[in-house]
Length: 329
Image (cartoon, helix red, strand yellow):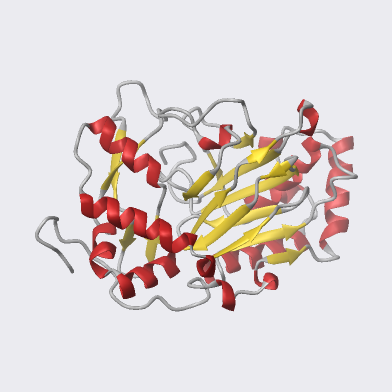
């Protein structure tokens, strides 16, 4: 237990975090996270798509037990193991975008993702699959960044409510320019902060006000009160997206303490250091999965094509076995 004069005591982890998940750029290899789909998996996928062409089925009713997907299941079990015991993120390379329609790619993606954990709602309206497209709006109190082409700074997904442990992104079309992804280990950030700024790390274990971006019933609280880091006696978990915290304090009409702001910005700076993140660009047909409790990600601003059919398009999925499938869990 630790505490300081300004905040209540909480359980913290006060030792270096070891293991593959606490990586830095110089000790992570591309083959640790860029994972080719094995040869025995592709015939199963071809057969699945052909079966669905002859026997159409609503995507949300698809059940892996109805199809011969043993090689796929074995591969996705390895992917899940890497998300938990490996570097915490994976890019699967790749589904054949030249042979399958957009809807068929989504069907395959739905089934493969469900082999990691159960798909759950990722918005208050109960949406299970979410199209990530630029709608021409700008980020605001009730406007999420995934609806824009603006730069998305370091964040984990839906940390203001009930975040899922795993997130998937299927790339259907890339942008005309930009849209580069970066990922950083928040376990590494924890280690760096413990070494450089232990007082700031301690503040990150204390709660902050998070703007909920309107993802709630009209009369519900507009902000939630959560820490960045938490420790349950077995593992460290993290959630992060700094602009939601600044907006949260504004919505609650409370002063944002200087120590908290400094801690938030310092962690941002640690993840932004080139030594502490990996950049990459998703190609059409590739699928990215991340451990949402260990990996923060960001995306550069992008310029889209003019024609609607050529615009950047990803499909996101949230995966969580614990709790209900609704957005609030």
